[in-house]
Amino acid sequence: MIKVGTVLESPQTGERLVFRSTAESSNGELFRAELTTQPGPYVVRSHLHPSQEERFVVLEGAYGYKIGNRTGTGSPGEVIICPIGVPHSQ
Image (cartoon, rainbow, N blue to C red):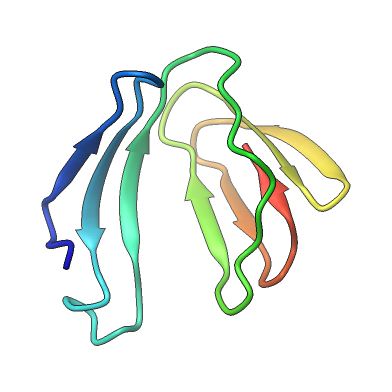
């Protein structure tokens, strides 16, 4: 099981994921991670979450996304919400 503070890094994409809250640390209520990405054309395929909402908070830079049929670019401080069951990609 992943523990709070665990860091995963991908040399292929330059992504870095730090686990801030896990199912174990929150009694199954919340999963929270800090994701750092590199500029570039890397795209996460469209997917959905059947039983949970996904949120992104842009800390710095810009973050392109598609949620359902809506596309946009998040700016620092913006919260991007992917509703339950709605396909989305980054």
